[in-house]
Amino acid sequence: MLNWRKAKKGVPTMGQITREELPEELTWDLTSVFESDDAYQKAFDQLIAELPNLADYQGHLADSAESLLAGLEEDLRIERAFEKLFVYAHQKFDQDTANSKYAGMNAQVQDLLAQVSSATAFFQPEVLAMDETKLSAYLQQPELKPYQHFFDVLLSEKEHTLPADQEALLAGASTVMSSAEQTFSVLDNADIDFGDVMDENGEIKELTNGLYAIMLRSKNPAQRKEAFQALYNAYMALQNTFASTLSATVKKHNFLAKVRYYQSAQEAAVTSNQIPVTVYQTLASKVNDHLNLLHRYVALRKQVLGQKELHNYDLYVSLVDDVDFPVTYEKAQEIALAALAPLGEDYLAVVRKAFAERWIDVVENKGKRSGAYSGGAYDTNPYILLNWQDTLDNVYTLVHEMGHTVHSYMTRHNQPYYYGDYPIFLAEIASTTNESLLTDYLLKKTDDDKVKAYVLNQYLDGFKGTVFRQTQFAEFEAWIHEQDAAGQPLTADTMSDYYGALNQKFYGPDVAADPEIAYEWTRIPHFYYNFYVYQYATGEAAATSLAQGVLENNQAESYKEYLKAGSSANPLDVMRKAGVNMEKGDYLDAAFAVFAERLQQLETLLKK
Image (tube, helix red, strand yellow):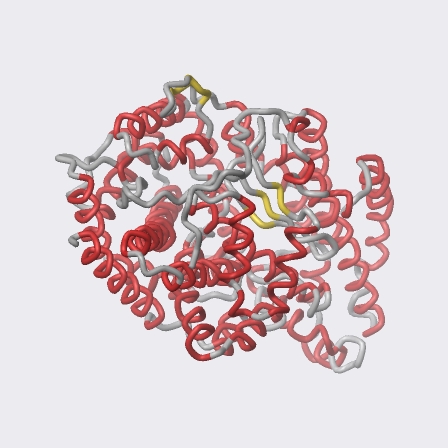
């Protein structure tokens, strides 16, 4: 049985201490990427010096199979070297976005990205201009045969690829076109000030994203309201600035889609990842068909909390009062290893490496990027950024990001560099399968009804946040792109009006129309990622099927084949081999059936 007692030891509440004050064991070790900043700079300068060499291959790819192979290998070598530089600079910046040295390093590597993109921009259009019979003959040569799928994917973009000089022009402008995202990131992570709030102990503290998440789970409604209003007042004060950065990003997406002859930015983003638009549309349709389940859960929340009026800041507090379940980071590691055990010892070996070799940056510090992610490149460790708090939600975050990390590790150790990454569509499936396994583990390891209710509550909240909420974001994202494409201005007022109404549609009549929630769009970084969020929802649903296969049908080995596949095949084909057909809505119906079953279980337990 799990030990549910309050832990005595854990990760300290770091709050706004400086990076230098953190214990080393709670920080990631980037010396395995470059031993020092000087080593990074040396490699950076070397790559700058080598970039002109790519020009030797331009105009000669079609000369022979040997010329094509040589040009391809040099292109890949340059990109591979750049990715390692990017990881080091980007993660140094993320660990303290207020550090001017690393802010400069991050800007430097962003500029290098534009240079690398410009230098390599000739490759794809030149290949696409080749005689197809000649190219097919080249690909029959033994040295080029392994690249067949690589070229198949490249050729699928033929009608959307511009002449080489135009591709180079767009690549060279990438830094300028990404300035809005950079401005948002700095403003959101370093410059915005949420002011001070009073915590549950009566102490005045500076509000941070980490503290905000804790306060929204407070049993004191006044605490939740204070945090909610303080945070949103800061965003509302800058609403026009955030409208400007988001509008500029949407315009960039629409511009690039138009010049590449796509019907929409949505089509450009989705189909360029080998996913038909129908997958996106099926998700939106199925979620809207099942909004009654979310409304039912919201109604249960209102009833249990005993509030005359339920607010948006009441949607995160636990419905179970009598279970004390703080989880230290040390305990979270034990739980993660136990929950993921059905995936096999080879899977757990990678998890242990992540813990032992400091792949994880654990706690919050002043200036650190908010949220969590798994990053890295082919030649680095697959690092994890966390902002740890001692909550079960953070255990879910840990296993979620560990899913990405093990996926990356297994892909990179089973595929060559050119297939050593995976489409973003597949990424969220690995992470949410881990969450499903964690839920199953927690429910099986206790007979205590209160503990079960607590875990069910966490599961339902997670599903709400991943499937319903991310689909809400996806609908908003589609709408802002459609509005801009139709020539409608994206102002703070127009976006807030639409978002407020959308939020009300999703959560239903039992949630008050708090004016602040209409401005939630100002603080969502994923709106700058170009139709990314829908994959959280599809990933959650697919993960439900995969997790059941692992737990009930001993399908861990076929699941790990998916983790090892990388980009060596079409993503939908990869999933079909793993047992999930994502072109049909069945997997979504199955996910909602699990949600409904567990909602019923919670309703029953809370009535006892």
